[in-house]
Image (cartoon, rainbow, N blue to C red; front, side):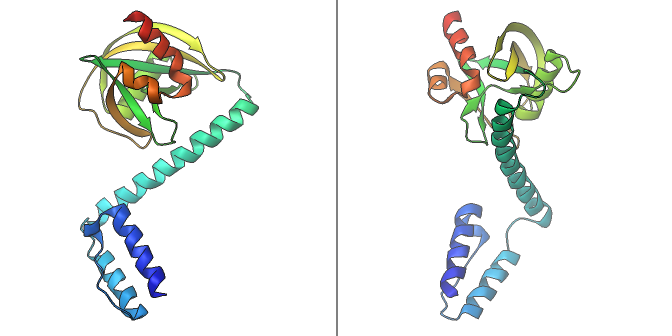
Length: 198
């Protein structure tokens, strides 16, 4: 029992940071359990911060499951035909803004699927704001392309604001050469287009 509790606390320390849990050496399982519980009660974050961390982790895991399962199912049963989507190409100083996806599929350009009746530009503006925190100031349609289950509109975008992450992934700036190593498969046609334009 003591070994199980010790392993649980060690895992919690790794995931939440060593400051979150303290554990004293003890051979008695009851002492070890009470130490772990008291350590949790002394967790550095206030209750609202703990709640936000938990909600964020649940959202990230839900995105992982929904993205993987949704794509798998829709490739087999495309009930609505090709889905419409929009993505944004945002560049600064020779680097491109990408999202490191929480579903483990690599990097993608900011963007996503259109809601019913939503215009491609409105989709792109909404998705850029949701995924990066940036507000689009100007944009122009570059190209549209078809992928297995989507028709995607690609916009070249100027945006302002402070970059921040979301439950879908973490934004990062990467060079064109870095893009080729880890870009989401559905966005590869954009990489080809960017290489031709340089």
